[in-house]
Amino acid sequence: MADSFQRWAWQQLEAQDRAEPAGPVDWKPVWRIETLNGVNTLRYMRADPAASTTCVECHNRLEQRPETMAMRVADGNPTGKMWKLHQLMGALEINIPLDRVEARAEEHNRLTFMVMLGLLLSGMLCIGFLVIADVARARTLTRQLAWRASHDPLTGLLTRNQFEHSLGYLLGLAKTEDSTHAIMFLDLDQFKVVNDTCGHMAGDSLLLQLGATLKDNIRGTDTLARLGGDEFGVLLMQCNESKAFEIAEKLRQAIIDFRFVWNQKVFEIGVSIGVVVISRESANIAELMSAADLACYAAKEAGGNSVHILKPSDSEVSRRRGDMEWAGRISSALQENRMHLLIQPAKALRGNLAISEYQEVLLRMSDESGKPVPTDVLISAAERYNLMPSKLDRWVVQTACRLVSEGRIAADPRRIVAINLSGSSLSDEAFLKFVHQQITSFRIEPTAMCFEVTETAAIRNLSKAIHF
Image (tube, one colour):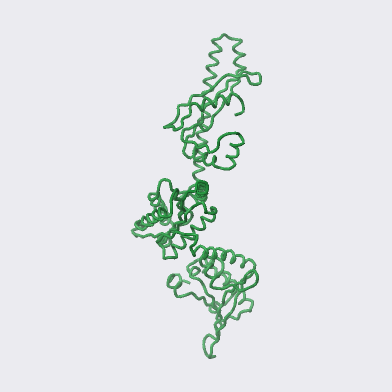
């Protein structure tokens, strides 16, 4: 507090505060007349209590920050202050110089002075009312902006950033109090079917309804967020591994029982759930998010519609982390020109055949030291992180077309150039347009090119394969 009045007035307001307010407190304003810079001044202070739970939560989170706690210690104040709704949080102060009132009082009698003072007090109350109204409008706008910044506009659930912020709070509790919590990732198994069959409006409606279903099946202390697309996240406070599995199974069953109806079509939805325990040994937010993603992927790889709890000894951890490193290595290899094509020819044994030579294009990659990288590992990591249609297959098609255009690969209706494609590229409409653009721009005879896919990929995307 800057001066004696503020300290005195604040003590008067604190005396009116309540430890457990049952509702709004009937605050009495505090005022007195002091001499400031040689002028008698009416000094007025009124309480500014915690008017909303959002305001309380914001200030309480602020109090837990290291920089706030350090400031409290430096000022000699206790740390860890936790406000409650309607408690005293701040104050509004108004100072009104009385020199003009006193001058007028010298010219008139005492009655005039009292009338003027009454008018001043009335004006002060009006000013106070306007200030309060303005502050209320500002608070409303602030709350609206804060809500929009922290909530998904479609489902009304928390966003990924807010989810990670809450995760950091639980991680802090686990380390300081040796408590146990859990994080879940949920990935819908049949969402793409609804989206492709009925369109994005149906997909949005499904996400909105499933968000409400998930919210109805978690505890009041748990946190639910939409992480993006058809992925949801749940934070379970004060929850051990067995209880986390129980809640995960409850959520899985709720989604299995859910029926989505759109234009008289009924869809059944499944979900893959990954669970990771948050404990004192947990490293950081990024590691926990990555581990939850690993667990969710393991559940999906196991056939979907299942729950997988990831443990530090889980072999999936090291395998998936290796894949994550591969994803970065693939991007670096493309940027550093460490990808190349190998042509494996197969020539006809008889000269009277329609096709005399079949040239299969094989992708190869070298590591940072120039050593060849196993192709099966390369393809596995690229498919896992959806890099085939967006990067690798595009690079292979573009490079092969360029080599044919430059005459470094012979290609005509009798000498065929064959390129292997992944199933994900086959179902990517933008990739088909890209292939057509490359063949046209390099002026290649279309009958000289052949694109190969596995039987499994073709059957899984039969209509797309026929269209391609």
